[in-house]
Length: 615
Ligand code: NAP
Image 1: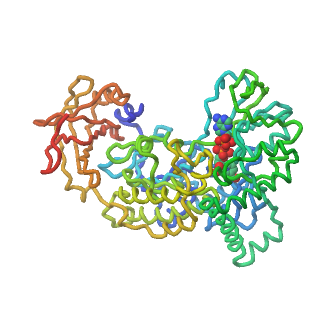
Image 2: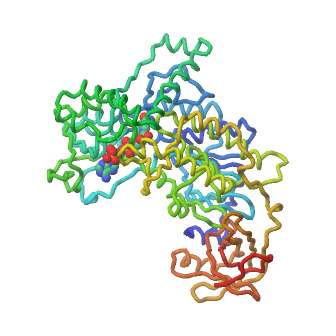
Image 3: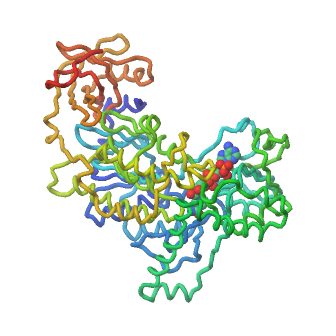
C-alpha cells in the first residue's frame, strides 16, 4: 500500500487543475504510436501520449549500443499500415528503426498529442468517477477515462547485485544506457552477459578496446544472421510492383512462424535447429575446446535464440578473453572471476538484460477497491487476458502485456492485433451516447483463459528445455510467451466479446448498498471525526463483501495516513451506531479526498445476507 509523498500538496489544492482526457497512452514506443494512430482512426481525438524519453521510438530510443539492430526481419518488423519499401537491410539497424518510428508518428500528426520527458509515476482508479488519476513526474495529474499502457517489457535494466560494485573506480553502464561519451578506444573493457544484446555489441567493442573480457554465465545457441543489403532495384520493385511488399512481408512472417514448431514440439524439431547452430559454430570456431565451451546444454529455443555471424569471430580475436568461471566480485580496478583472476577494466558494460514483469511492477497501479497490481501479481502470479486487460483494473488496457510474444515473431504484429481489440472495448464506453463508463474484465474469463494458457505452455521448450530464462518467473511460470502460433492471437483479437467484460456506470451500480455522512476514523489511537461516502458489494465469485469510498479532505487524516501507509498504525472506521471495522486508507484523489476500502466486515447496514460487522 502506498501513500504518495504528493498527497499533502494535492490535499492543499494543486495550482494546476488536473487535465481531463478520454484516453491517456503511456509510452511512445511502437505500442504508443500504434495506439495513437488507431485512436485517431476511430475518431478519438481527446488523448495524450506521455513518454519518459525525449522522442518517439521506445526500445529503439533507449537502446543505442553499437551494433544494435532488429533480429526479426524489417519487412515484418513494421506496421501493416505503414509499410516501407526502402529498408537498407533485411535486419535494419537501430538508427533506421528509430527514424521509421519517428516518421510514422510524424505522418500521423502524433507529436501534438505527445508529452516527452515525463514519466508516469502512479495510476489510481477513481471508482466514483470511473476515471484513472495519472500522476506524472512533473507533478501534474491527468484524469483519463481510459489508460492504454504501452509500457514495453525491455526497458528497465536488470542490474545484478554484484559484490563490490560500488568499489569499482572505472565507468559502469548497462547496454540500454550506453555511454557514448565514454571512448572505448585503447581501453580495457569487461562485458558481463552474452544474450541477444551482448552478441550484437561485443563484436563492435572488440574492434575498439585494447583488451576485452567477456563474462559468459551460460552459452547461447547462435544461428548465423542472414542479413542482406537490399539493392536499389529491389527497393524499386517493392515500391512500384503492386503486392511486392506484402509478398515479402508474408514470406518473412511464415518463415519466422515456422519456429513455433520448435517451441511447442522441441523433442521433434529442436534437433534440426541445434544441428544448424552446431554447424554454424563448427564453421566459425576451429578449436574443439572453445566449441565445447560455447555449446549450450539446454534445448534450442529454451532461451531466446540469438543470431550473429560476427560474435564467434569476435571472441577469437587476440585482444578478447572469454571468461566462464563466473563473476566473483568487483574490485577497484576490475572484475574478479570465480577462479580468482582479476580482469582489469577501465569500463564495464552490463549486458545483463531487463526486468520484464518486475519492470511493470515498479509502477504503482491501484485498481478497484484500492487493489495494488504489484501486490496481486506478487501474491498470485502475474495474470492478464490476451495481454491487454485485467480483472480489478477497469478501463486499463495494455499492449504486449503478459503471454503475447514467443520471441520468434515481430512484436508489432501482436501490438496491432491487440489494439484492434482494445479499440472495440473502449468504444463500448467512449462511443457517443454510451451510458456505460466502466469496462472491466470478468474474473472468470481471466481465470479460465490463464488456466488454458498455462496448460498449453506446459510442454513448451521454455518449461521442458532445461534452462532458466527471463521467460520464467521465480515460481517457474511463463507469463511472457504466447502459447502457440501468433495467428491465434490475431484470431482471438478480431472480435471483442462483450460477454467477457462487465459494463457499468455509477447509475447502474446505484443498487449497491452504501452510506454517506458522518463517521469516525481511528488512527494511531486518535479518533478523528470525518465525512465519508461509501459503497459496497458482494464479490459475485469469491462471495466476500467489499466496500470502498472516500473520506472528505481532512488534514489530520492525511497526516496520520502517511504512518498508516508505512505500516505503523492500523486504521479503523466507525459509523454512528455501528461496530468499528478495520479499514485501509489507500490514497488521496486530486481533490484531496482520501480513499478508504475494506473487505469482509461491513461498516454500514447491509441487505439481508451480507456479513455483520466485526473487528
Ligand atoms: P538477456 O537475453 O536476458 O541476456 C542477459 C545476459 O546476462 C545473459 O547472458 C545472462 O546469463 C547474463 N547475466 C544476467 N545476470 C547475470 C549475472 N548476475 N552474472 C552473470 N551473467 C548474468 O538480455 P539481453 O541480451 O539484453 O536481451 C534481452 C532481450 O532483448 C532479448 O531476449 C530480446 O528479446 C531483446 N533483444 C532484441 C533484439 C532484437 O534485435 N530484436 C536485440 C537485443 C535484445 P544467462 O544466460 O546465464 O542467464
